[in-house]
Image (tube, rainbow, N blue to C red; front, side, top):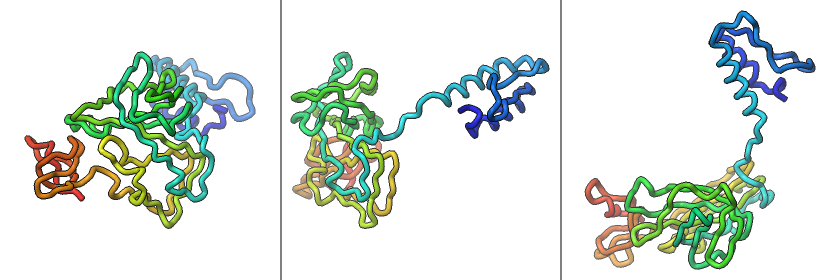
Length: 260
């Protein structure tokens, strides 16, 4: 396996160039050790040899695909193929590996992959923090995460912060048709003040022949202008003005700009 890996000769040449050590891979089909070290090597050759060993061993490690592929192939992906399952996070227990959500865990089952996202926060540096996790058990309002996958980031839901989980379908192959996909017309994907506004799926192989359009499913604009302003990354809708934009200038970051 190592002898056939195309990166090995280049790596060996690199090590040789930097250490003057004489390293040589055996020719394909030959038996014996992976490489030999000349007695004429310089003193740093041993350190570089250990580095090379680490690189070679890393090639033997299994490489995880971006998607599990459990949901199979979608030759023409449709809006209905991407589950609009999103839930507000209300509690966070790393010790028990439990994420509590509202209103319930309906639509999420064991082995599902979820995306955990900090959707709103007064600390704008935290907005958009995300992590992937695999569900071990879904019951009532509790999502138990498989050991070793509980997100290390601390996500927060409070009057000034919102975090959510989004179910992520896992395709082995997905093709977005040339007609594209628009999620604007399906209210199930829309931000509802607690969760939503995110379209997510994984695919081992993806063909984009058309556009994915999520216009209009995010933060909501003002409903009673000019005396109300829409939502922003920093806070829910409040009296003020404007529609759901990003955030204001320094010193008034919570004031969303004029959005859609």
